[in-house]
Image 1: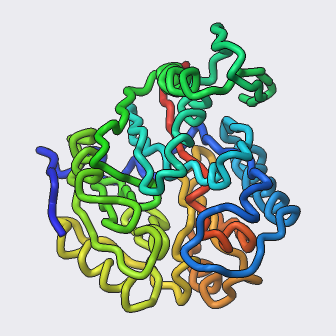
Image 2: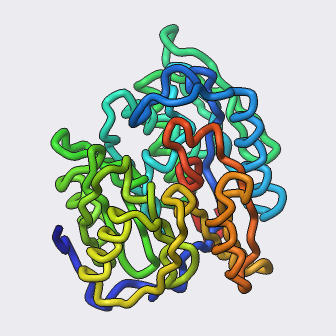
Amino acid sequence: MAGLSSSSGGGGGGGSSLGLCSHVVVRGLPESLSQHALRIEKGPEVDFARAEREHQLYVAVLKNKLGLQVLELPADESLPDCVFVEDVAVVCEETALITRPGAPSRRKETEPVKMQMHGVKPKISVGNVCKEQLFREGSSVYRVRCCKAWQVDAMKKALESLNLNIVEMTDENATLDGGDVLFTGREFFVGLSKRTNQRGAEILADTFKDYAVSTVPVYDSLHLKSFCSMAGPNLIAIGSTEAAQKALKTMQQMSDHRYDKLTVPDNAAANCLYLNIPGKGHVLLHRAPEEYPESAKVFEKLKDHMLIPITNTEVEKVDGLLTCCSVLINKTSEL
């Protein structure tokens, strides 16, 4: 438990930029997710057809209901967990940190995410070892060649095309999953878990020097955001278990700022997706009442939010929650 860095001004933006979003990166579900995705413990088998429907509705809300520019990566059957794009990139303002996921099997996922953020039609050939895939940006469909050498280069170019500053986590002693990174708009909290270590947190602190970064031990959960998330400016949604409440207490002790809290009965339901959309205001994607009825009642008390219930039953079977399946990017200038 430590504070790794602090900004000279107490955190840029004071939370006002939290949730602002113009672009979203998502990725398709590979059929291999059903049998081969990583999970904390064995459980019910994933109904892939239902999982795909749930994910399509999730993407449709972002694209059609909220009007965001959605960049869609193709599924990769060799990467069963690839739909969980949150873990491979942390984006804040004009900087993108490409992480080094804690599970070795997931590290190749960073490569096509970089390529997708590029959003540029590739102009090079990488030889016969590559296979072709399609990816979409808006109404445009591009055919791209995918192999390790091309994907690393393409990820950088993808981010550059969005005029983002790119930092790649290359230290082999570091691990960081985006699911362990909670950005409040004022500061970062980084969960130290089985997937994220102290060195990974240090690199994040070095990358986002304008914000304070504090670490929080995570016990009995995959990630920090397995039991918490931001439900609005200054508002932390938190699960009711002892471990979740202990982590919140640690965050309160580490911070110079006092946050409001929204306690929900179910840890998984505490993971919600907050956006601040011009013309729509505060928007919150939260778990559906048929999944977590008591937690849904708590969210319904947020009268200033546009509340959008989302069903996530199947992906949760492999530890996937609402924030896991998207990377939010806000571009204030023309690309």
